Image (cartoon, rainbow, N blue to C red):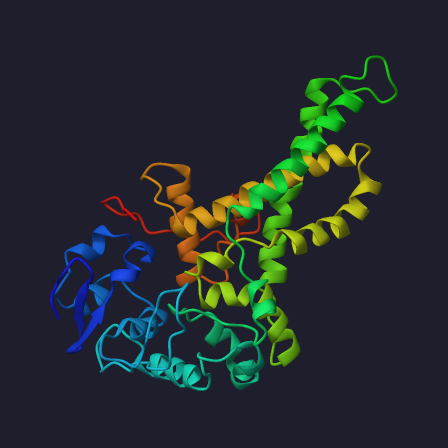
Length: 343
């Protein structure tokens, strides 16, 4: 295999892999991989403490496998996993078990109707990431509804937020002498309450709803996989990393109903909460696909969120902020590096 610009060849246990499509998605950045082009990565994987999931996912890049295409927006990969040889630093039994779990499913067909096959070990399966395209439904229409380009989120929510801010400001601040008139500072205070409310909701939903253990119930497993499990199984799929606007709008309406009884200026609070939500969704997409610079807030959050996906699934639930992780003692320790990562 020639080391051309169109490929990124590496070797592991005497087998060839092409990491070209994975370079920018690699949690450790591009620079940490460049030095291994055309070389063995066995010692590097051991040195940097890769998880069993990482060894498991390596099979998705095997050159002489049956895989047709691992492009996440292209064709669906077929089966073709790899069980590597014995080597210190790896839990070979765990990797072999993950391979066996994966073999129970046919990735060329919709996964949602096959989840009963992994139900007894769903948590271990869903937290072992793969670099594949995931089809959920047989129906092309239903399947198309599961894809959401990131830009649809601000296009949908910014006009709604702007409308709420403008109408509420005119009604309660710029109304001249009127009932329940607010100062600009009071208006901002109520919006800030909404923003703070969102940060707690972000943490609560992620920890207690998205990471709810469905047990062996196939129905609950399917629901979990739809709302969050899929994101952990295929964390590199850019079309499934923001929340579809229409379902989000429905959830917002449900949550706003009780909110309106607790806050006098509930629509102002809602505007603040929606700003928090929009910020969260954009940060979530960016920490998966963006290239933040070392020393910035988003650089720290990208590494923090990678820790949640690939090391500590039961910690680091904050995405736009770590504040509630510290409050509830679920903060993850991210290893300090002597060099900067670049994606």
